[in-house]
Amino acid sequence: MIRYTLLCEQDHQFESWFDNSAAYDKLQKSHLVDCPHCGSSQTRKALMTPQISGIRGNKQTPSNELANSTPNRHLQKLQQEALEMARKIRQHIHENSEDVGDKFASEARKMHYEESDQRTIYGSATSTEVKDLLNDAIDIIPLPDLPEDKN
Image 1: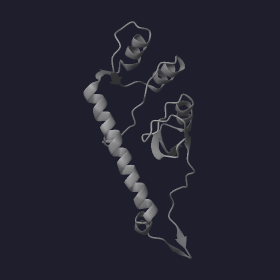
Image 2: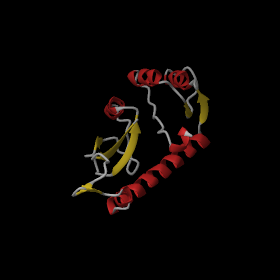
Image 3: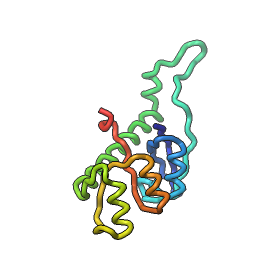
Image 4: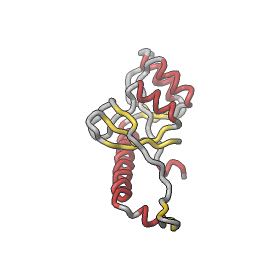
């Protein structure tokens, strides 16, 4: 997994996680990476710096000093806000959509080809299934993994 800091055409900054850089590139080209602030799908990667501890003279800066710096506090606040927004989006989808489990790809395909009724669904799909759906121009929106999903 890789985390990118992104900017939309209105310079709203947000972060998102992707399986790898190629996954971001594919989703971005398909206009599937949307700004959570304005909904724009015109996004780009922001300049990012590696997160390493600094050195002053020969003395290494304590990690808690870096963590408490103003830019890091601001970034942590933005991360928390984005995480809370993702949780609310997920909750809304779960409350207002049908869970089709691992049959997501086949159900999305059936709806796309009008072989079943149109409805809002969610579920899981393999990376190959996702690629096939995108290649067939079937509109899907991947939901980001949340930290609690890893527990």
